[in-house]
Image 1 (cartoon, rainbow, N blue to C red):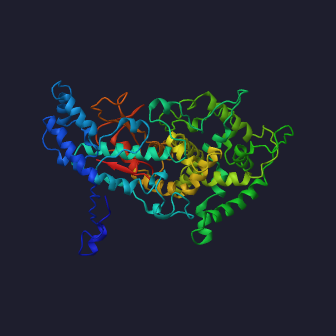
Image 2: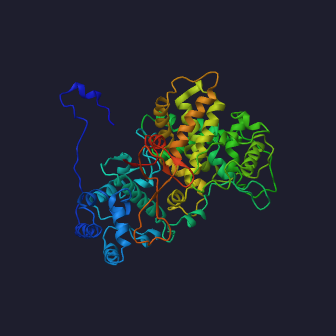
Image 3: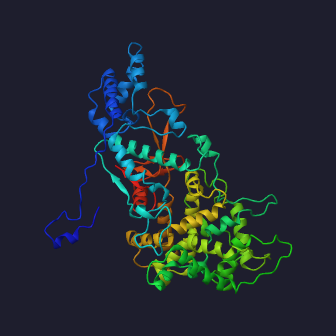
Length: 532
């Protein structure tokens, strides 16, 4: 939990621990809810429920496994007393209203302890961060990592009551999801699996009407540019500045380096191309690498994108394109550009700014840089590049999630999403985040020495661990609906806050084990709250 070996130097063995008692503020509706809950329990023949009410928010919605669940079901089915018990249950404060749940409205749990936890983890808008701030950023962080949120840390919640982890994880995650979708006025959606299945990510790979690759800007998001990883390294800029530069100062330094690098890029002119030619946005990283032969494997005509396979996915974000023929066509077009076989028109005026965004915020390029910082030359560049592809693919899946997409786009809805996402990553200094995480991760998985005979296996293990953390799957927890108000089995999607245990938590596509949760919680990424 904490490092305590330093305490041997002093007399106070608890010198690094502080106990803070915060039970929250009891509201009149809380007390009314307790009285009503006791009446329902009495009607069902259950014992006093004071401890349940104090500990488990919306207790009757998460009482599965408790005897009162069976007793209440029996009572509601009794023609003599069922109607009266039902009317009491309808009036119960703190019970989840499923119509409100379907409309993503605020749910009142009627629990002071829960409200205190929500204030510490949700009201401060920590959910706007997809990772916690690095300990030593290479430049000043932008919103949402600035201010007090720069010191935010994850929460581990213990309870002796089995209903608490499920209840707290469900309600916190619901509230976060509700706020993420509600950031843009008029953008709130109904809370239903059917609606979510109609939502597609914006970093997908599709064909244009002529059957050609039509999402090459998304390819730039997952392409690890060797040149940009080197000349856009904010660590070297911070070292040269002798302090912590602002984000704009870091961008300015990288801008100058990119302008010099672009001077060596030559292409076959295409007078028939639109002027300016926006293909430069995705072509420039490839051409920069080609100018210095930084990624010679991209010349291969049999390159089919194997470096990107195995990416972590969630929900329906990647059903259209993960590992299929369309993505292969995008890789082949990228290889043609690298080989100089594709003519281009004039450069857009903002090309350098776009390349600065990619240098600081393309997850694949940032991952390539961080792997180099961590493993150095003992890991061959082609293996580092493949590992960066896998990590970049995991971030692509993350940014394709409907709630993440809604949150990231909220302040700049009209901007191309791939650019908004790269600027988001740059604002949180993703380079420093991955540097710190890979440094710790390398030790935790026992990667002390690189296997000289098979370095690719070591790289795969490291990249897979990052994928597992970034792409932790959303678990689906079933709630109780004793009145039958929900049209279907009510489920809470949990990702921001998750329940920890030895059992497997069911998801819509697979399972999340305790080992997966442990790895994700020990990373900078979600979940930010773990309950047990």
